[in-house]
Length: 345
Image 1: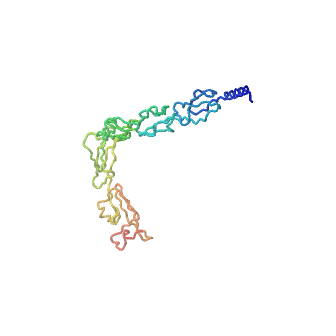
Image 2 (image 1 turned 180 degrees about the horizontal axis):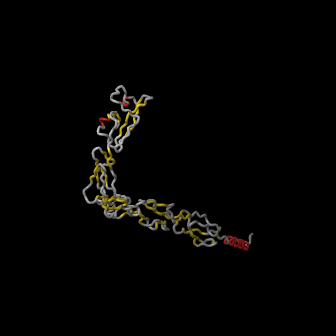
Image 3 (image 1 turned 135 degrees about the horizontal axis):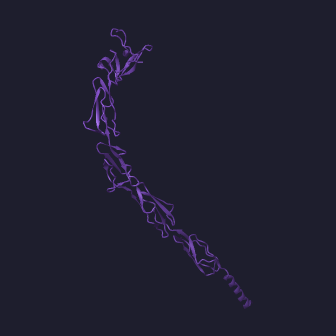
C-alpha cells in the first residue's frame, strides 16, 4: 500500500513539471502585430493578432491562449492588403499601374490635346481609397488667333465656344496689294497656342519693259502692285518667246520676261516634211516663213539600205539649219524619187 506522503510528493512534482511549460514568442504573421508581445507566456495567457493598417485578416483565428503543453496552436491567419476600386480607364488618357492594392500608386497621362485636371498620381490608402481623387483629362483650348497686320481671317470655326480645340485651324488672307510670307494656315497646338502666323507685306513691281519688235500692256496707274498683270505681244513676222501674261510676284519682280523672236525664211522651195506628226508641203504650210520655235522633220535617204529616215530642224530667232542629208530635187528631175516617198528604215 502506497503511503499518503508518497502520493502527495508525486502530485507536487507533476504539477511543478506542468507549470514549467511556458509558450515561446509567437510566430510572425506578415503585416501584423501581436498584443501583448513577450518572449514567453504562462499557460492561460492570451495573445491577439492585429493586421496592420491597410491590411485585412483572411482565414484563421486572431486570438490564441497559451496551453499547458507550451505549444501554440497552428496559426493560419493571413493579412492581405486592401484593394482600391478599379481605376484602369481614364477618358482621353491612360492609367499606368501594377496592382490596385495598398500601398501601390498609379500614374496618369493624357492624350495630345488634353491636360490633367488634377493629380498626376494617386496612392491606395489604408482605407482602400485613392488619394488624391482621380483626375480627368480636359481638352486643351486655344484663344481666338490674333490677326496679323494687313491680314484677314478667312476661315475660323471655333469648336469650344469662342475658343478652338487641339488641331483646329485658322486660315488667313492678305489685303489687296499685300503678299503673304509664311503658311496661310495656323493650327492650335497641344500646348494651347497657335503655330506661327503669316506676315502680310505690301509689294510693288517696276513697270515691265517693252520687248524689241513687240509691245506690253499693263494697268494704267502710278504704281503696280502684287498680283497685277501685264500682257505681251509681237509685231508681224515675230513670235512671242515666253508667256503672253505675266504677274507681279511677292518678290517684287515679274513672273517672266517675254521677248519677240524673228521668223525664219526658208531656202528650201519644195519639200514634204513632218509637222506635228503629219506630212505637209513645206512651201504651202510655211509660205510666210516659220515662226520662232516651230519644228519640222525633213526626210533623208539611206542609199545603202535604200530606205528613208528623218532629221529635225527648228526655227530659232530667224535662223534654221536645214539637215545636210536632205536633198531638194529640181522639178525637172521627175525621174528621181523623193525621200519622203521611200519606205522608212
